[in-house]
Length: 379
Image (cartoon, rainbow, N blue to C red; front, side, top):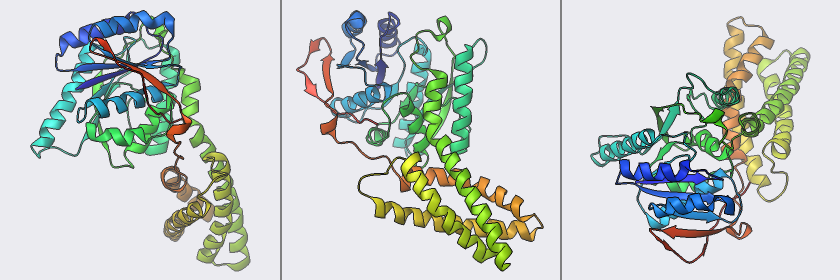
C-alpha cells in the first residue's frame, strides 16, 4: 500500500505525519511529491526522507493535479500492482483516518480476490463539516457540492476531499484525466461514474488548523474555476433554449403541427448550441476533429430530440401548457447533455509529453537516484 502525499511549501506537520504513519501502519510506503516548494522548505522534505519516505521533486510549482500524476506514474513504475491512498500533508488528514481509508481499500481488494466483492472501487474519506469550520471553507465546500450535484446528480458529501483510496487498476485512467491544479480531483469525480468506476464514502474527521491557514486552496476562486465550464454551458443552454422556444412557437403558430415544429426548432437551436459550445464552453475552435465532433453532436442531438418529442408529447397530452412542458423537458435533459458533450463530443485534448519538460528528482530509501525525465499534462 502506497500513501501518496502531494506537498507545496509544507511545515513541520509533514515529517511528523510521515513518522506517525509509518509507526501506525508498517505495511505502507510513503511517497511525497515536492511541487516546487523551493529551498526554504527543503529541510522538511529532508526530514521526511530520513524517516523513510520517497521524495519526488518538481523544479517549479505545477499544481496539485500534476503532483498527483507524478506520484501515480512513480507507483505504476516502481510499485506495480500496489493500491494508493492520497492524503494531504498539512495536518488536515489524521493518521487514524489515513489508515482507515487504507484498510477499506485492503478489504475491497480481499473481497475482490475471493470474487465476493464489486469491481475495484475508489474510497473517499468524506468530512461532515460539523462544528467550527472556517467560513471560507464552509462556503467554498457548499458551493462545490451544489455545482457537483447539479452536474452529476451525485449527492456526494465532500467533493473536495484529498483523502482517497485508489485501487491500482484505476491508475492508468487517472493519468488521462484533465487538469493540473485543484480542479483535477473534482474532474476525476465528475468523470468517474461515466467511465464505469464506482466509489464509496468513509467518514473522517473535519480538521482545520489555525483557521485552515496552511491550505493553498482558495474555496471561492478555485470552486468557481471548477464550476466555470458548467456555468458557460448553462449560459449556452439558455441561449439555445430561447432560440428553440421562439422557433417552436413561431413554427406551431404557422403550421399547427407540434412534432414537425419541434424538429425544425431543434435543428435551428442545435446549430447555435454546437457553435457556442465548441468555441466558448469546451474551447475546440481550432485543430482537427471538426467532422468527428459534428457527427457525435448530431448523434447526441438526435437522441435528445427523440427524448424531447416523447416528453413534450406526453406532457401536453396530460394538459400541461406548451411553454411549461418545454421548460420542464429542457431541465430534465440539461445535465445529461452536459455530461455527454464534455466526455464524448468535446473531450479534452491530450497534450504530448514533449510539451511538458517536467523533471523530477527521486529519492528512495536513503539514497538519491539519478535525475530522470517524467512527463505531465497541462491544461
